[in-house]
Image (cartoon, rainbow, N blue to C red; front, side, top):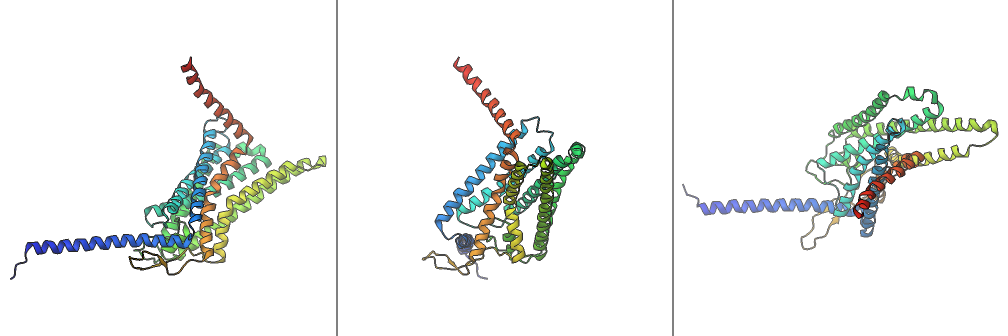
Length: 375
């Protein structure tokens, strides 16, 4: 037998190690290249990226500010602690804060890095938390409409209906319903036949269409998501239509003996209907797009190019409609958390008075130590 020199054996292992490291670097660079190519297929213009970064940063900061300010006013006021409408408002603000924290920073990070989202554990967290918060906000504002209907049209039975125990049950039911739907969607997602070696998604956020495309379009999950979303949205619209119509009808009947028109009631109903439309606009567009055609996330595969060129060639660019719908959905998902505290919180005169008085007390307390130090 011929003995193999130790130096030759070490050189062979070192060469194999370097080759494996080189392949790993090429694999990582290829993944980043794919993510960059997919991003360019969605947003080919550099100016649009800068505008979207500023826009998403503004909306995210504004959402955190107005929601935290409204929660501050609700938390430091004893008058609002027992009223059902403000208890439901606290639940809505909590859902909006979670929704902003899930969507805003993730989209900003993708825009700054100019890459699409990587498919990992955080992607599942986005998918789950995004679905839970969207359903929770939708059901909460529906319960708020029912609460106003009972308050206006059945004032005598208002307090017996909205007891603390029932309110706790309603809040628990809202979260259980939202969490159950999202858990069922995640379980059904794994019926797809997507390639497991793909670690780059085709979107700037792990929203349902992007995740479903990455996992091979699981039919069960898509059907369940679309059916539950459509039924929940339809139920929400019907309850809102019934509640506001009955409230407006009672307000109109109250002034009919005086041959007058209740202009205030009409303006109030139109205002809340308009704000409701902005709140539900992302869901309405999503349901309509699911009903009209199978919405496909932007798909693009980069071809292998020489290292000397360093260019990214897109094999199949996405359609303009798909890219526009994807960006529009991301924008509209961050808008409702900015609107909700203004509509259901700051629009109320009692809320504005409580907030201004609380801020006045807070500024006076901070001014006293400084005045004492000067003396």
